[in-house]
Length: 115
Image 1 (cartoon, rainbow, N blue to C red):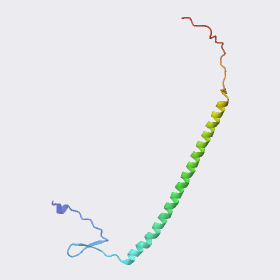
Image 2: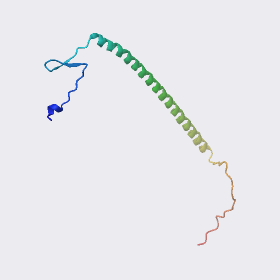
Image 3: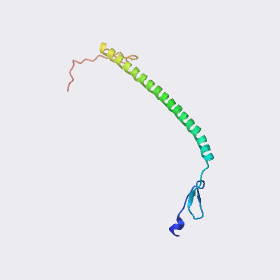
Image 4: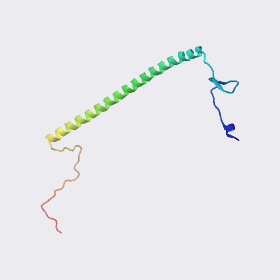
């Protein structure tokens, strides 16, 4: 098989046609078809633009809500931390709630261990 036989020529049937000499020529498109195409495409493009703006606005609104929620959470944690730091600065007593004494013993630290 030669290279000429292996070539595949792809052409659009609707836009090109072959004349008697073997050359491809562009098929003229009627002005009615062109205007009909524009009449269909313009509303489609406008609708797509409106939908794009709508979804972008919805995304921005969700993003703004998420930023506000995270901001409030950080503010709340910072406030809690500052209150804890103020309380620990005033009073050094540590109160352990719900503790239970299991066994009470006396420890004499004055005795030295024998080696």
